[in-house]
Length: 404
Ligand code: FES
Ligand SMILES: [Fe+2]
Image (cartoon, rainbow, N blue to C red; front, side, top):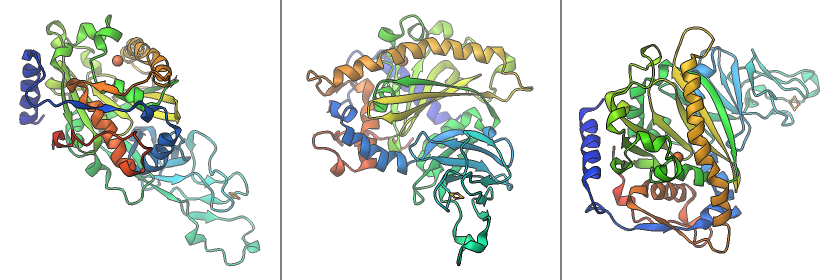
């Protein structure tokens, strides 16, 4: 990995461990109003101005194994089909027929040569073009060339597939910025999907994202697992452009060089620093990815209403031979489940208490500042001037955004 980045992170870890007061550069982190998590009007703006206009992770390219393989995505709001074309390119379209709007597929996933609407059988090529209209003699001046499925942006970076409904959005790799290079250290292209788990949560989606952007809660919430593994005093964070972030926390000495997976299932591309620390990337808006070797997860927070969220864990591992998932990976999932259960059990009670008259704005420590950074990026995506009165966060930390 980049030697300068590695030494910077290692130095910062040492500095964090040594300090006994906030670092000299620290400022008071401005308050975060709780209405951001409870106001239905805020959520409506997020759907319209954020989720419908940003890059969203939907999977790994291997999950569309062959031409014609498709998956339907509904988690971002609109129903969208992502399909691999005959030319191997992944494309995305709204799942809405140009005749009278029926879905062109009702299956969650499958493989097809064409996408054929189940209402009157208009059929579309894998590139979205309209190929066949039954009984076309009854349509006057039907311009088939102008009636392709409506496209959605779909771009792949290092094997990871993202979609964006904003046709004018900046390219994915530009949006990811420094993350693109840094995360490619795990060699995404050589991955394969292990499985997916979904937890239904009674909380606003941002409450769950916040929890993955700090390790302050680890001693209290995970005393019997994560707290034994990590030294929370070493936590080192970077606020990156576009609301992205990086968090590194050192493992305790006894675990630092202990292999977590057998050599057979290890990912040789993972650099030493990612092994000796727990480093995770916050990919704005709703994705957190802990760098790891062996099987690891992409944590996706999908709002299902203003006060409910689906936490989708998509697991990947270095590609293995055969159909059966190595047992070691499944054991890893099970272990992670214990940690997740502790995190998710926290969410409904917090959502309830911040909805009470006793709720007051959040006080954020300097070590938790990624939460403010994430919340500020939500405001920038929506436009602070559009937000319900009193719900915006401050721009006071903008000057701490780092180029890498
Ligand atoms: S709505 Fe699709 S063919 Fe009629
Ligand atoms: Fe946690």
